[in-house]
Every structure is written in C-alpha cells, then in structure tokens.
Amino acid sequence: EASGLGRIFPEGRLNAYRMGEFDHRTPASVDQVMGAFFLIRASIVPEVGTLDTRFFMYYEEVDYCLRARAAGYTVFFEPAARVRHLGGGSSNRVRVLTIRRTMRSMHHYFRKHRGAWVYFPLAIICAVDAVSHSIVALATGRRPLETMKAYGLGLWDVLTVKPSWQRKTGATSRA
Image (cartoon, rainbow, N blue to C red; front, side, top):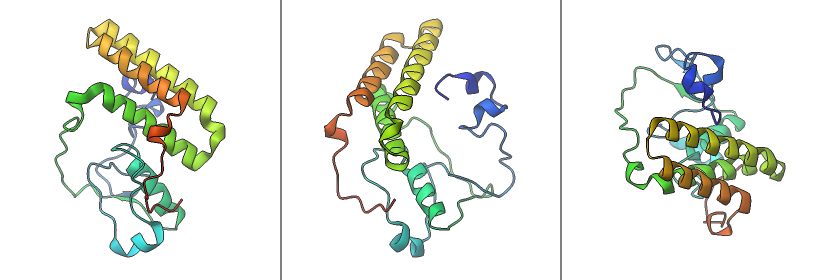
C-alpha cells in the first residue's frame, strides 16, 4: 500500500489491502470490514469491548475486527447490504490533518497489536509512503506541497511518538 503498487496493479496480489482479488458479489468471512458502516452484535460487546477511542476515525474498525476474531467471532462480508459511502466526506477539507491522523492510527494499531518492535519497520513504511505519495503528487500536480507537508508531518509524528495523541482516553477496548 505504501509503495503505491496496489494502485498500479489493482487486480493483483499487490492490492491485498484494498482487496483487489476479493469477490465482492459473494458473502464471505473476512479479516475486517470497512468502518464507514458495520454492524456489531450487542451480545459480543461485553466480551470484545467497544471501539478504542484512541483511534481517531482510522483503524478503529480494523482493531475491532481483530479483537472480535481473537475472541472467536466471525467477521462477515454481506454483499446484499447496501450503503452509500461518500469517501472523503469527513476529510477532504482537512487533508493534512487526515493524513497525520491516519499515520498516527496506523502507528497505534501496530504498536497495540504487535508491540514496540514495530517502530523501525513502521517508520520505514511511513517514509516510503511519504515519498511515494509525494512523487505522485508532484508528477500529477495534485496538491504536491500539501501532500509533502501532510506526509512529512505524519512521518514526524510516527518518528517522535507524540504523547499528545498516545494518551489514554478511557477506551473500554480489550486487546
């Protein structure tokens, strides 16, 4: 995902993050579902917990689905369900902050579930992400300065592990 190769080869294995090879017409058990709309059975909340409020809008569903699966529940994709998601509606006007929040949430998710050792590999991935997106923005003329600023600040946040976004907020998540 960070390299941008998944966007160049949308139907291949390089696009696993965006489920490029997934059959979206067939109901199936999946690792995770999109957080724009998903249902949680009320009976599992006492065991799995609620959404972790330390995530701001990104990765909270990934975290929840992982915790639900770890508790023995199935995460299921149902193609008959129809919801219209206007992607970017919450983030288009605050692009720099959105990218920073995404990188912060990614950092929090991997540290939470994989431990502190992920710091260096994640820093490298975030650096590749920053470079690849900046190159594309420069090549296409699509807000290159804003893109470089956003990814540069996001990388800085990951490298410095800012305590202001790592604080405990009373989330009732169980990991």
